[in-house]
Image (tube, rainbow, N blue to C red; front, top):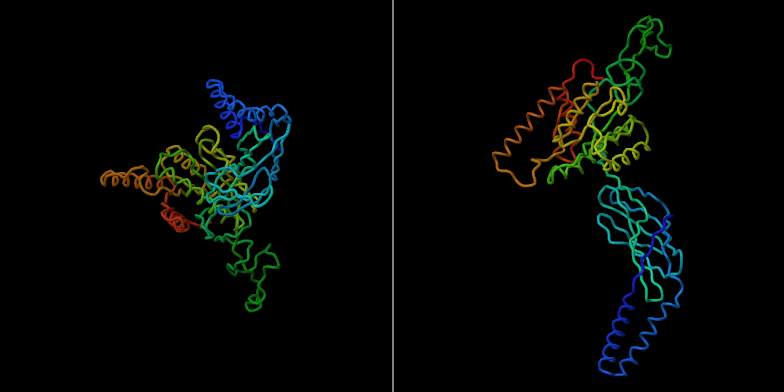
Length: 406
């Protein structure tokens, strides 16, 4: 519940009465026309009734059904608002305020529906108009709630680069034998093998005990790193939309597979959310991303506590910030598997370049890809919004792992 102060002013009707009375009195006095003075008398009497009106309200009290509303893009969410006058009397009229990026529609007395087509944070507002006796009026926009619109990600799964996974049961098949459900091999029985692993049909045929080995299934720790540093106007600044969508898709896929997922937002302020599992973690990650545009710069390197050991890091960036690239190299040095996804489409200039300059820029970009790959951080271009899985598959191939996959 919040209170907002009202600033009263003369209503259009009061201004019209004042203007007409002033003109009539001036003309009547100058021209000595008593008829105009008589004509102005009722208007002066109407204006004088303002002193007899009840005390106007000093403010309005707004109570919304929810302080924070959450929905996905193109979805609508319902909320109700109760607006009352406080400190006096007033006739109140409430209507949705003009909006940019979202839509508020009134569906009943005090009931509204709000929706937005693009992810982000919004503050839906209502325009409260107060009137006192038709002579005084006050109008102000009143924010009633906070709307958090989450991005939608394609339902297609995204592969993970091969890495040494933590010793935790999950859904990723490995090349190691141990506890699992997939058939691996059959070998002779050894002391210490559990009785339930004995393969009785094979043991009966070969005359000695044999056991069935299973392939181990392990879970991964996936961390999406978003580069939200301010970019130059043009394609670079427009790439933030793809950065958020790509990170959402990676996190969504990881949580659906039963992996732990976290997020690091590398922007004006470094924010992170530790890896965890479950649907609740998905919404916590989206809230962290939406809250990432406040604060001042606090450094470039990601703290060690932000990532679990041997985490798989998928970074989304325009790869134009040197500090961000250094952060990825530091994560690789700490032992994490790091893959960078380039979300920039074409040169990051607002105006079209001449062919020679554009070719030189692409050559420099290619050299940057090669240098990052040599240092252990492959960079792949994400050219199509619907083909993130192909981009990550190419990144996994570029790493060329040796030995066991997981």
